[in-house]
Image (cartoon, rainbow, N blue to C red; front, side, top):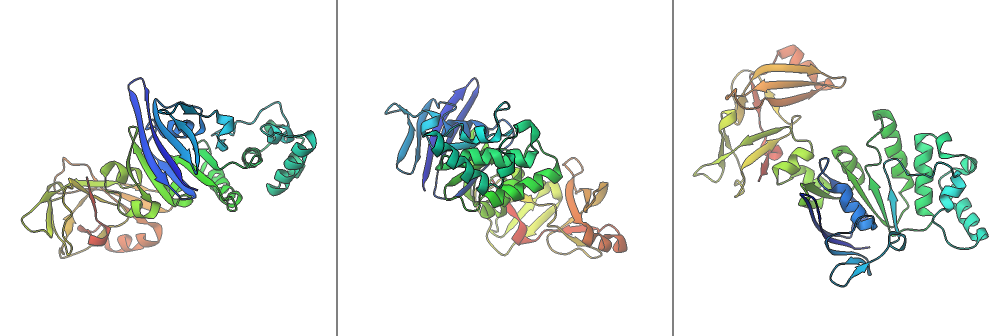
Length: 350
């Protein structure tokens, strides 16, 4: 099912300006706190009213400022999973699932039984939300949403308040529960791991606007913009200078001139390089190498993080992260004199 969103909304000094179209079943919206992710979801759900624009799902127009269309949230066939699941605390699980249903008492009871069986919560139907674990609450919230067969499910940072172990467990469970869902799922998050895991297509928001969009894995490998690269986890950036050669650039802050096989794309201002992608070099300097000296180091359970000074000590440190299984090479040889940049891992950014 195609989804088309083109909305603008002013809220004080903040201005949301989001436009995208997609036929993907799993869409992610990634961005820092305050960039407009949740406001985008709320506009789609009808909780917030855009200043102007249009929202359409399939053949159904949900909002159209020009034609004065603005369907109420309950008429949009959209399920919204809030961060805290928003279950009614004084209602039983069965009552929570039935809350949004229409029809006779018998029809509602039948649908509740179907959802309880699907989400394996038959034994919880008489309990209150306060008597449930986080995973059970998530199942009940999804059962309530799925009971009225929505066209779209919106996930608003559903794991943001959880500890690491519980977060991983509930991510696996949510993935399994949504496996057979044929509608569209849109998830907003500030976690690159979550969107990479769940979403086939990705939008990256920065200060209220979409700065890049496309297939998730493609964006992670080529984010195109510095803000997008930062949000996808890139730690190292260096300003770049073009040369007369189309295959050569200078990184003055790192004290290196890169000789490349492919032509350098036009219009870029810097390069990005991920902390795990450097190749350590001991002894004689090789092509595309940065001379480095240790500034500091942090030991983590599964990797060591080195912060190294490049040629210009006034620039930010270079981050080089070494996974535990590769650390024995550093322990044997000591800290490398150089870090080598490989062309395949280099990101040219605007």
